[in-house]
Length: 309
Length: 309
Image 1 (cartoon, rainbow over the protein chains, first blue to last red):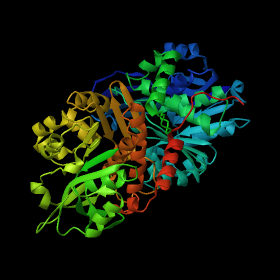
Image 2 (cartoon, each protein chain N blue to C red):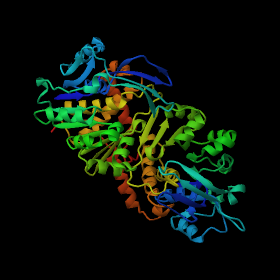
Image 3 (cartoon, one colour):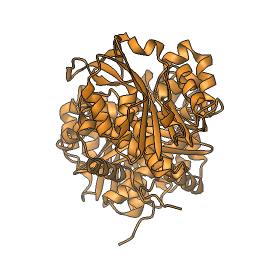
Image 4 (tube, each protein chain N blue to C red):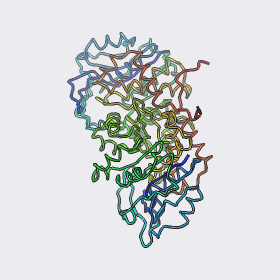
């Protein structure tokens, strides 16, 4: 099937307890597209970069069968830049620099060739931009998923509420779910949030895994316990990209298949954090992914029926 | 099979954001014995109370087939008392009062009838007391599990190390695992700790579930996401009691069966937190437990093979 990713393609500079990077490639759209490219879909991307963005990375996306005609290159402008420093526990970070640059006036133009796309993944962007993408698609995709963040809850809650009404799957982290719902219990939060629009809610809990809620059903997938988390940047976007990439390639939006999609997303995210930026994702194969999924099966699988020898 | 629980039988006074209690029945030994009494074992307990301890609770344990001849009642002395206040997130608490009373000079005397016991669960007590129980058993149980806490790591690390060498399963929480191993990553911590003696390590992560480590194998069980955590007191002990109760009743210490035991322990712990103290555990049936285990199966079960319709 076809999958449209909308999200930032950007530069990041990252400090972790293990070291720091210069400007490297990042952005939600980049991680989503890289993760979803492990699956067999027609891939589209709508995003924007400045003329400072390296051509090699655009070729890299094309090599992975991402159609980049929706990726605008703004002459004389600069790519979005974010810089952050992770604390020792890797669970929190400080933003050091945010330069919106090309993102400030981003108009998400949908190429004609993208019309009729089957699945849509909206990475974290202003809720107005996210909504305009949905409104510009002439036919509604089979499933629309979106990410957002506390920043938009703080400054654009009304816009966010309007956009949430139009999506099927909301993917946010536990803190964001608590802020959005004003409930501490994630079970309670999930009800409040699903009353705001999305029929499906995925709450990411970082190293503590992810929860999927739909109707009266609930599914939990752990994160893979790792020896070392080197750099958490992009893990949530990678998760979302793996989730939607798997859904689109299987063309199955049943709850059972969403579970598999979450395991796929979790497996890809577990690679993402092993090196700085996109390095690890760029260097794994589909076979590596299959092996990691097997590790998730072993980690969580149990059979309540005891076989007596 | 037979299972010996060693642990405090005590009074607690608890404050949570939902309310506060007067002195109610608590103690690691109480929670372990109550939880393990859901399984079909011969149950022994070694503990100590003062003469202020209510006879009704002792009858309650006997009604649940706990042999209480190892539960010493000290004339003229008072029962161990702990009082604590939970913070709003329920993940941390302040100790308000600790009165050791009868625990100060506790000598864990093993009744003759307890010799030859099949399984041993050592609740949190001083490592010297825990070790003397092991030394006083004439035959080594098939599996010895122990709980401990950061307090003993702070003040009695050498004693703790000696005791850890004698046990098979160590059950501690994530903070304790980090303190004991001086490693932040729980995967790394698990290796350091298992080099100290226990072949099996269970790391409890509270609302984030539990991990079991053995050789190169790892299993993860989530906690059941709940609408409300009313009082977390005793949840860890209930988990341990359910774990060892299940192991003893099935008489199977394979890794596969330990997974089932962890799900049983997690299910019982999920009841424990729903009301103050032991109230909920005292009022559920085996059928309630079976239904809750089914909820765990539904929560975590996935099949990576997609059935194409």
